[in-house]
Length: 350
Image (cartoon, rainbow, N blue to C red):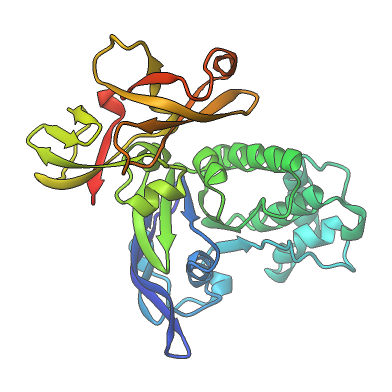
């Protein structure tokens, strides 16, 4: 297993546009790291620099502490599976999967055995003679994955591996990638703009905005402990309440709160955030409550999403995700009390 370390990595185009800026990151051995961010943020550029398809302007890329920058792409041990599959249309599945082994001079019998084993792994046994145009999009993606894995790389690089698939195929492929990675224990780095995909697949997420690394950590950190308002918004955070921190207490226009989550924020102006699914509708007699009025509600099948106006006219309505059945019991315009659990409140700079 291989640890990938990026140190102060930068890449500019034409000396003007800075695609990646001073990015430092470690992808742990045998784990899945997601490079997450909106389109054009530089995440694919990072992947291509690791693969050796682009040269960095500055910085270092190391495998297990050894620089790979002087090593050509084909000898790095990092294999990239592209978003558009890039299968050879004139070759059958077996020849596509075995192409890398053939280029390495592996004998035909070994190639045949390893190709068969790899197609078994990606759940395509018996597909050796088919052409790419005879395969579905999901099957082509599996062939591309098999082609990448058959050469037994140190590092697997996936560029938006699920973006071209329908929803049900995306779920199947996601489960397959996770299963294979756990089975082989290969260090995997993949690029995605989909938060759900990153959260489900990755052991570690690296969030990138505008070529700059914003936050790195396990998926739950981005929901429960975002470092900034833009990060919270990117992960679906919609509730932000300005306040002032005095010791353990935060005073706001809608009430005072004592968050139990550890926060490094110093005393002074702060922004309190809490996710919609963590706010609880409650009776008026309960402590730690915010009084409000129901502005609207939307039934979403598994839940109901409420917008609640607070007593502060300058405060944006709070969004609450509650049990779906409540849509029949709570009417628009009715008074309501909200409970903000102290262990679900998080503070950020304002």
